[in-house]
Image (cartoon, rainbow, N blue to C red; front, side):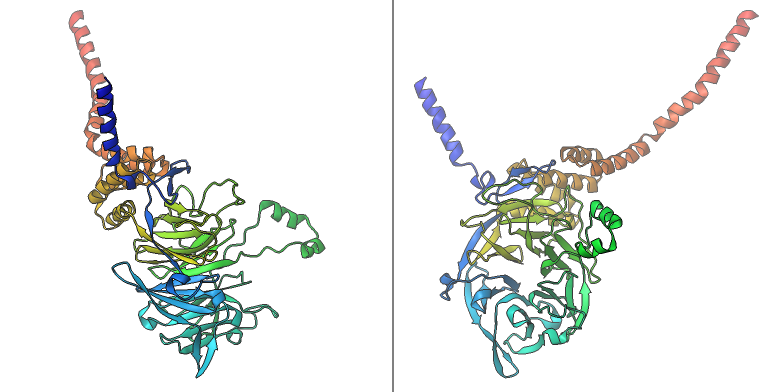
Length: 489
C-alpha cells in the first residue's frame, strides 16, 4: 500500500511539473469580466519585455515625464521637468538604442530651449511625415519643427482670436496631435470647450468635440425655481475638460477626460462627433465596480488611450494603474496592472502609445517606460478577432475554442464563437453560446434567424395541418351523413 501511494504521488508531481504555467497563472493581475460584470482571473495577455529608466540609458533619471509618442520604430519622450526630448530606436530583435537627447530647437537661427514640455507628436502622415510638434507648456507655445529641429511654425497667443481665451488666461498647451489633413489639435489647461483646432499655418480655427454638459434633474428644477439673483450667484453648468488627445490608425481622435459624468474616452471624427461604438455590457469606462483600499477609491481616471491595428484600443487608468483593452464594439477583453513599484504596475500613469501591438506605458511617478509584448494568450485573441474581421468565421471559431481551453472563464470567447456560428448560419448553436454569455439581445437576433429558417423548412407541415383542419371535418361530416342515409333506407 505504501509503495502504491508513493508511485501515485510521483505521478501527480510529474503531471503538475509539465502543466503549461502560462495558461493558468498571471503575473500582472490580469482579469476579464463575466456576464454579470464581475472580474474573473485570466492568464496574462501581455508581459513586460522592458523596464526603461533614464539611468539605464546613461542620461540621468527621467523627471516627471508626461508624454511619449511612437513614430515608425522610434519613441519620442517628453521628459518634462528635465526640459528635454529623449529619442529611442527599437529594433526587430527586441533591443533598443538611445538616439538623441534634445534640449532646444533652432528658432530662426537662435537657440530656443524647452520649458516643461508636456506633449509631443511626430506625424506619420505622408504630407508631413517625420515633422514634430511639441507642447512647450511653460513657454506658452506649440513648436512645429522638421526632423532636424528647425522651427517651421510657432503657435502662441498671437495666433489666437480674442475670444479663444479669457482676458487674463494663459495659453498652456499640454497635448498636441495632427491629423492626415494637417489640422492641429491641442488640449490646453483651463479650456473646457473641447479641443483647440489650428490650421496648417498655425492659426486658430475654433473648438471641436466639446463634451456635453451634464445637468441633473435636481439642478434643472433648482434653476427653474430660483430667482435671477440666486442663479447668478449659483454655479455654472459648463462642459468638462479633456486631459489628453491621440490619433488612431484610421485618423480618428481618441480623447479622454477624468469626469465620470460623461464618457471618459471618446472617438471623434473630423466634425467633432463621437463615433465610439458602445455595444458591450458596459461602456468603456475602465473599472465597472470598485471598492476602497490602500487610500484608493472611486472610479477609474483615464489619462490616455491608444488605438491598435485591429480596431481594438487600450486605455490607461491613473487611479489604480491599470490598462483596459477593448474590441471595436466596446467590449472589454481584459485588464491588467495595478498600483505599485513592481514591473507591470504603476504609481502615476501619464501616457500610453503603441508600436504595432507592442505597448509603451509611461509612469511619471517612477520615471519609467514599461514595454509590454503579447503573450500566446493575447496573440490568440488578436488572431481570432482578425479572422472574424476578414470573414474567416470557421477559422475564428476554432481560435476561440483554443482560447477557451486556456481560459474557460473568458466570456468574450463564448461571444466570439456565437458570432462565428451566427455568420456561418448555425443559428441554433449560436443561441446556445449567446445564452452562456447571457447576451439577450444577440440571443433574440439569433432566434429570429432560426425561427425564419425553421418556418421555411417546415412550411409544408403548416400547410398540411391547415389543409387537414379545413378538408377533413367536411369530409367526415359528409361520410357520417351518407352512412345515416344508407341505414335509414
